[in-house]
Length: 199
Image (cartoon, rainbow, N blue to C red):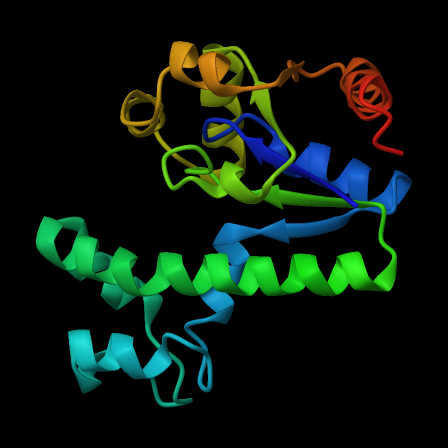
């Protein structure tokens, strides 16, 4: 089994690439962000530790953790954010590694791991190669304004706080240009898979 790590800035359209790979290439898609939510659910690996860190105030009436309340706390408290990440990130990695092993044993040929901080958090350590999804900044801003209702200023601020174009390109094995022409994007995915005889 080959494992491809997918990364790119916010608004780059990573989900478009993931959907294509799941539907057309029978890839097992693992998204760090979604798994992060999973491990916070009651019975999840991080549930008790997060309540211990933030107190019982973050428990909603249905026993789930109020992620909005947690994010409000860490937004203005760097130390709490670091402690939260210290709980969630190892659990997410462990979950992904376990799933990859299961997929390998089941005979799956291709798995994809997507994380915004794939490189910064060293997810590439368990990927055979890393793909960077590149989209022009103006297109990313438009997408964020349309899909998430962000103001232009908020979109620009988020993009500015993410890793630079140079950083992504320096660490990627393959780059996909995703500026809106889906046919071209899909062709690049197919080429990326074929170039290393992944499938």
